[in-house]
Length: 238
Image 1 (cartoon, rainbow, N blue to C red):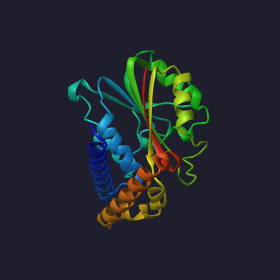
Image 2 (image 1 turned 135 degrees about the vertical axis):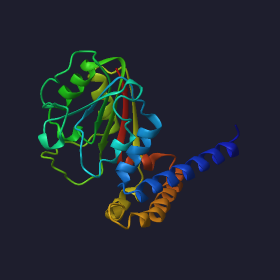
Image 3 (image 1 turned 60 degrees about the horizontal axis):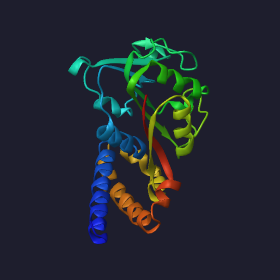
């Protein structure tokens, strides 16, 4: 494909992604959660025994709508958390060994959790231990975000740190995708609109911010998206 053809494809992809992101915020998601949900839709495949580590019952945890009901296609969904108020299927302290046999899990979700775990290396190693060979971990961490203690908030990770931590835990293939842009980072100030009854009004501002970031990122050859990051989505294979 020639340079013009490649530019057209890139432009179409940017328009598509901007529209999808704006639509997610109009449904009531913050920019970070909107982007996380899009990656989960595009990349997550669930089968067999699935651990949702740190499952949240918060209204903002809209990713739960992307998980098929238990029993669908043999899916065995297991919510794991320490807090009783989250009504987990299994209670577990993520600072200690997970109460599952080695190689007994097909998929693991760790979404907006890792930054709250001080012994994060131990947790990643435990997830790798319980996953079967070829099993997958889907992980999301915020980067540009306020301190949010639930009850603790310890870390912010770069793409290099996430890749290294996952490989040191024993994962064989690690794909880290940044979500961001300088305008979208600034646009998180409007997240309160997306979480309000007026959430539909967030569509046009989010669309404009996304298109502006796509233009700036094109001029900077991708460097802006890599440096101004809202969060990272990670897919790691055991």
